[in-house]
Image (cartoon, rainbow, N blue to C red; front, side, top):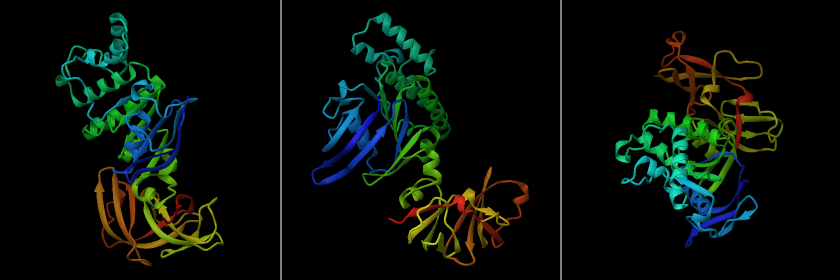
Length: 352
């Protein structure tokens, strides 16, 4: 029973905030909509939830057309960024509110609330009020309230944004584990790439009201299709190039073979390569070797980051990330090194 958007758009007067968008979310999938502010990700969430009506297009769930269905009739629940807990109610009452609205009996509500509280790790906190809870505990109450009625789909609107870094990481793993445990479809909205990578089965990257790319975290990370995705999703080295039509691409760093199974027609492109895929030392078989001068060395604990200036293109900067170890302590600004670029680690990005 999947969710589908068929050419769904949204405009406010003359301003279009979501271009016609087609998207499929599989039953039981954890899908994340990722993008900067104003990209249209929250608009999609509001359209799916029924809080906003589309200007055009169709929203389907299973075999049903739910485009005009009111929010309270959709078999969905939403977890908001600010949790939206009732401050005058206990944890138990907050979790059980939806069951109460559905007029279930008190014994049935108590039993279901107890079971759900155990799933999210709140079993000993049912008598507390929201003011007595930490940020992470409040988040779990909001999640418990969302899943207690067993919705077919849960919408999550940047629910981890207010948490500190360590608690956010803990909640990322908890959310994914919870989603697997209850086998419910999650549609998650965030602007945080780490959240998207950590939790998602698939990621929808959006910009300016349009979908740029849909794929698994590895697809998006290692094979960005557009310049926006390559620049937004993590740290990519972007190198201008021109595909010559004979299986080669010319760049300011030299001519090298294009990755296998890549469109070979002649055109301008950008080469994208992750910092951890730029290797120092002798080139491996088939790799392209570039002489560089180290411009900067930054120690970041387990990782050491280098900024390299290629001799053939001093205006181009290559960022390199290496595992920190004592054998590399001699790397310093001004040192000349060889950087190796393997064709299999390079993605060709279409120029927008």
